[in-house]
Figure 1 (cartoon, rainbow, N blue to C red):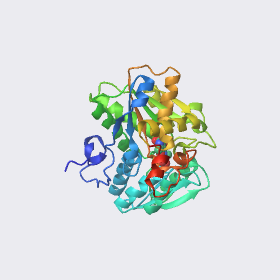
Figure 2 (figure 1 turned 135 degrees about the vertical axis):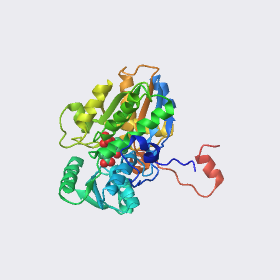
Figure 3 (figure 1 turned 90 degrees about the horizontal axis):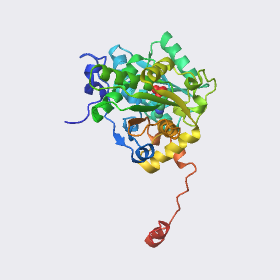
Figure 4 (figure 1 turned 120 degrees about the horizontal axis):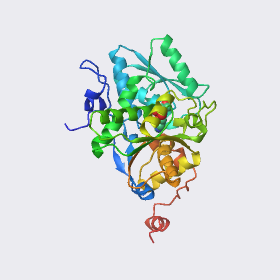
Length: 351
Ligand code: F0G
């Protein structure tokens, strides 16, 4: 009877729902805020990880999707559509099942992680692989929702942002106040927009005494906001944030400027270093895109931009199991042993 009820029930008074809205939920949200021991030592700060990979489909998208699908159902939609680098499609597919709706997903061909494709498939989504990148998929999804009976559930749908802002509420509720800095990976820029909205609302209502500086990090090969221009052919191993023309670009700039924050880039090498550090030293397995927040924090610390003594939260957005190829790549092959304790003990270095 004390189970977390999902973000709509937990934060009902702060979301655009009414008594008659059908709540489509998998009990998303309520994710762990984990103290990061090694990151805290390295930065001289109190660093926490908001582990969004603990959501039902393994990413923060579930917060937005419970809202988007509930509202689509309320409005009588029979089908929903999204463009996705993988996580949004996995989430739309699962919540579509709960709502008894058809989910159609458009993904860039060959550029989504296998685990995410598996999720969309097993939940029975209608998948089209588009001969183009995410930005092309989003253009197509918008055209379809404008002209056919299908509701768009990308983060350009404002109720997605409403759902995702609840992560900021949870952090303030757990820490007792907002952190000094909040660090996020940035792709289509919906999530940084959502967190900033959540933090601002709590500060405006006096639930927190302040709002944090918002720090966003894009992958260097897909860093249009940092460069100030659309990237035509975005590239990065962090496929979740391989986006060249973010839909919420202006909102991301507003979050940065209003909060006194920054938006910078991290290289794939820096992302993979942070990815391995999180797994091997903090015990938290995330997907590569999620490590961009931590890579960014470490980069900023090396540049002397992190004043010690602050409270910092890094959102790690998706579960490592979605894209395990990078965990296996470059790691030593496990040795094979016979069913023999002496040999096993020897190979384990126990003798
Ligand atoms: N991290 C992960 C794991 C993501 O899947 C995404 C976005 C982001 C970060 C960036 O968030 O777009 O709000 O700035 N994934 C979208 C998708 C694009 O289709 O799943 P953002």
